[in-house]
Length: 117
Image (cartoon, rainbow, N blue to C red):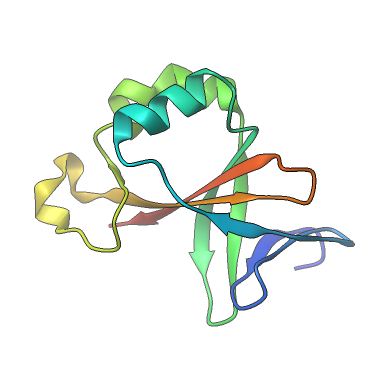
């Protein structure tokens, strides 16, 4: 995991190589529309998708915000869950993303999407 990017679950530290960045969880917006506005207005600076979850950490894959914006309508908008629960049968293609929003010490917003399928 030397070159991996991961989030330490308990401490909420983002680990990128040798760097350890303390994150603070912040409230998600109340609606997908508000989240969409944040993504398209560049209010969210970084987005990761969790590719693998372990007991103490989540492996993360960085996503280009331009790619997220391009694929927003077909791959993300109707698949993001802003609560802690979802029924996969309610989603086309049987997958969804649970979302968490953080900020780093410089107040940059970081969105992490955890894919469930």
